[in-house]
Length: 158
Image 1 (cartoon, rainbow, N blue to C red):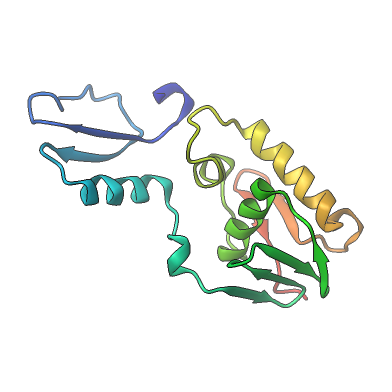
Image 2 (tube, rainbow, N blue to C red):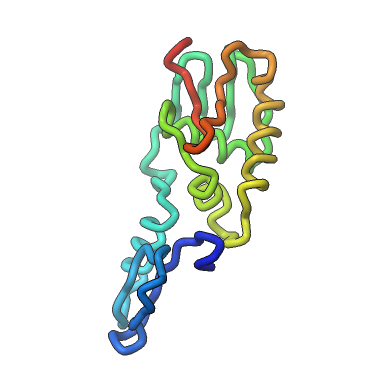
């Protein structure tokens, strides 16, 4: 996991948690016994997600509107049908509008159940999302790739 830049949560006693100095992706360490709430909080730190219940029901970004409760997207007041994965990807970008998110971070947030998601998986999903939104016909597009930084949903120019 270390070589794939996957964040790590370790749970154990002090003797079990002695780590080599080269472990860099360690995100959280919990001493046992750990309560389920502590483990869940550590997982939230690693995944970096705001629980859905803490988000507003709607995000209105002008050109783009999202109904998070009913999982509906609207571009220029036109309903756009999105598969579940692409909707979650768009929601992550929308919640963080104007701020680039790296491919690794998007992989953690959109595929929290998989440690094997790659930057290519993210790139393919962003490509599908752009196609579904009609982003290739927009000037400028809603979703941009900021080389070296990640993907960003840009809405301020609209």
